[in-house]
Image 1 (tube, rainbow, N blue to C red):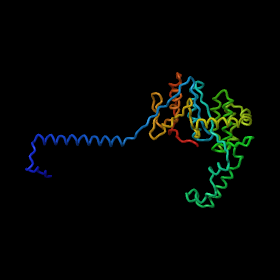
Image 2: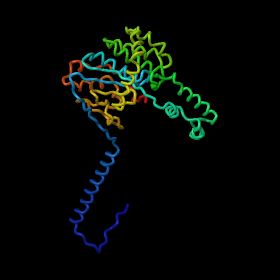
Image 3: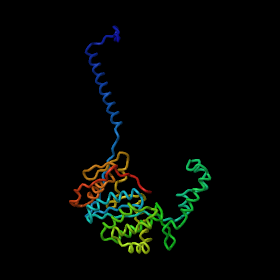
Image 4: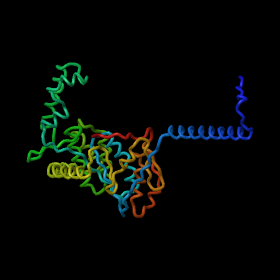
Length: 322
């Protein structure tokens, strides 16, 4: 390759040419370095770390909100069990349940089951193949939804539901009764584990008694509590979930602080608890929740040093029932 000659009519002293070329080389180097640095920085994924701001007490309290047959809630019960077994009465780990008070059954059912008058739009949006199929399905769903036998109903006429149906609502109440009556909370944890393993939202009413007896609970007392106190217990749960803006199973409060903090759920978010950092796949694991509880003690007990066995297999899902 030929190098073009500098025209002879322009006279530049050699030292100036050298300095000029040197400056160009330096500028070129730093411009290239700056660009590559900027490109490298922009290609990196930003990690946002949120600190769990624990409120410290002598005896921390963990409230967990579930539904009896929400799979994510059942999973949380499995996660919390080894924490209960480890810390026992040094902490208060208390179950709560998510109910809905239905004030307008017609409107509620149209929102949840659909409206036959809107079938043309449903077909257009490909929810159904034909209008006839839509009307048949939606009408049947509406009739089922409007059947008051599918709800818990008070003597005053108030209607209460749980997401997965009447038998789930019944089981929610029974589990509250069992918790309140049992002085040995291990019985309650065994009862719930039995229910999760052996019963469903379709057969809970006929399945629960054997599970309660196997856990050492008095089924007669649970039934009496259900019949006499059920509505009041439901109202208390609704008041608590409303007060804390809880609608998803599972939801956790540690000393009335949401765990994990909402800010930690952003993309690539991590959570700082004391001197430990947890990523999102670890938020629902025994050791991370235990760490949050232990960070909430004014003086943590020796049990907090114990490393628990985390759930085997894939990390717990982050989903919920709403």
